[in-house]
Image 1 (cartoon, chains in turn brown, cyan):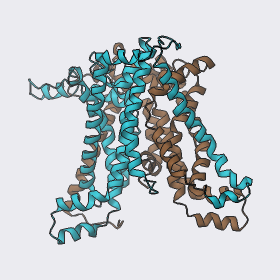
Image 2 (cartoon, rainbow over the protein chains, first blue to last red):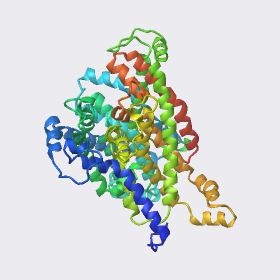
Image 3 (cartoon, one colour):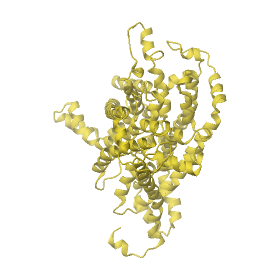
Image 4 (tube, chains in turn orange, yellow):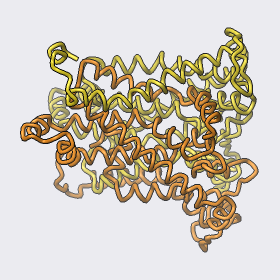
Length: 277
Length: 299
């Protein structure tokens, strides 16, 4: 791939225009939602859509008052961050072990771990629900953290493995020759070389946990509900207030969109599961 | 572990890789087999609101397959799964080939293409519910432009509702598929196409015979991730159609949820979950193994 800039030929202009056109098309529903969030309910259902209007923050106030946005957002932050950190702590050593001390079974183990990711979550819902009920963990953040961690573990191991595998073994061997302890080896060799992979994997899991609705809906309700839960409560049939719904949606996705924009490289790597490096 | 290694004395150093691998493996073993067996056991009992252990054999399965709603859900899963994966792949590949040239600000574009993937299915569902709403979205817009008879009300039509789920899901994923293919195309040497063209192949043929085979690993990752998304589409259905109208756009996950939790039919729910598990085991796992067998793991 060449990175030098090419001249603006007609073909390049056409391609660029097409690329941005597609981007706009893909982005349109989100843009539309962004606009609607700042309209009054009456303006929101006007057809054809208004593009010039006096923006109002009223929807955000209403959403915040009616459903305590701060609490839902806090639940989302806690559950996604804690589960991601916890997951990285468990998955990184496992991936490290498989990448640097592979045995005959490693391949099979990896495949098996990946295949667990394809088990429909509903298959495990009943037992988990019952267990959490017995333990009194229903509707707690602890329950969601446990589930999110388990849910993302296979993907984390898999992705970290592909990153660690790209680190040349010789470097680690050289460090060992020089008498580095396991900790030093980790701290001074593995961590600096693997930090990109850790960041991308972490971001992916953060996004997945943040967006998770199935478990959040089933295991969390009033106290531990995340933003996904809040969103669903707004899209219930009796409450079809589009402007408020848009405001709630915007508030639910804003953190991800903003974080994603400032860490584009990690976002792209993470969302393509490490395929784009 | 190879024989020569096993003869070495067991030191902490040599055991460490196994020790650190253990927690992950243990967690997954419990999740996979523990919960699967539990669900399987439940599916042979009379459980309703709460689990109980009166063995009833295959009664729940018989009940399940006698249920027309389960039929609809299964059909929907096939329609949705096949269409969603096929359309996303084709569209993504087409866009990628279209854009596979040097373009300014490619990094930014790629982020934008991927953004829908970063957005929760719940939000996607909400946005599309608006666009597809006959009274508010597309239909109203086209009618106001002067086409009085224009009809587009898939969202409220029994036969068509499942396709609205496909539309929303394709929208969410095609940018992602494109990003994957673009990255794959980046790795293909331009001179390959030139060589094929010199040999007299048309551009179309060059792509078909030269480029696509090279992209096989990308197809593989894309299909794996897309089917993973398809299985998880519970949220999207819930947000976009709520399974309606009636139960016309139910997927098995939504069926299971409704029966186990809203209708206090835990046994039926468990048996439907088991059928889903079997389906996945029968289709995806063999594919995984056949593609990744023999040392060339990774992507």
